[in-house]
Length: 342
Image (cartoon, rainbow, N blue to C red):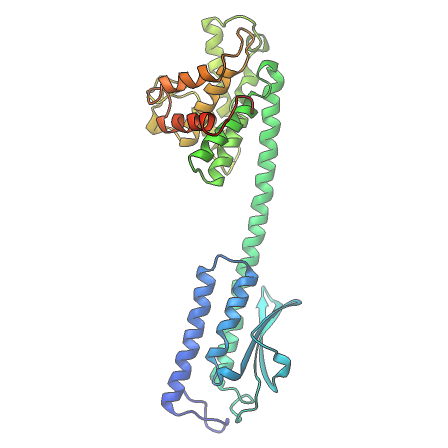
């Protein structure tokens, strides 16, 4: 639509339509940048400011700038422009910066200096959109910071809990840490995401937390356990789950702890679950726990060594232990040089 009469430059209908299409294309580009960009706020504002000049009547002579605080994103030197129009960016009722557009040459007068009325509307629209975008980015950044702080506290809690379990049982001191290291090595070989690896590491670090409920004389008994004593030991899995289940971890730690003694054929405990009912992370911790337990010394026996441990998981591959996890564990030891106690 052409500018109202009496405001200066008036465009023919066809040219006015072309100008409106340019403005619409500019807004579409800005929306695309906002919705698809994975870069930083700086990168996005650099990309947005580059789209602006093409939407103005004289693009070859147009300079655009977005200013926020002491930072500027611009396509040229706005100080050289004899004509400039500006719109403030408001974020949560606070002036955050400006969007400025200038011409490097003098042009025939229109409704606002040499600028069209529709260009003022476009500039105000861009500023409003940037304000809502920046507000969202700042809110998400604050939320992300809060989440990072929460996750740090959860990690510290896991460290404290893991230490509590090991204080009760000196013979397994370091066992949880070693299981965590091996479980992460297996998960890395399997291509788990960083978040999945963190779940594996943290759950393995406290997988025996339930042993704090088992009498110390049983944990440290220098001879093989009687049946009723072994049954008490087995209760540590459920006890660990009860300790952890009400903590709002962003990872399924309590469930992994509950499942780490389950077996693929349903012969494990506490619930006799089968492989398809178990988390992949649980199956990884299960294998890592078996291997490290066999390697380690116990009050009633010397360590059996890694070859015996690997023979155990290979013999029962697919029966007791996830075959994919077993294969990854074998690769970690035989191809990547992993050693028990690493």
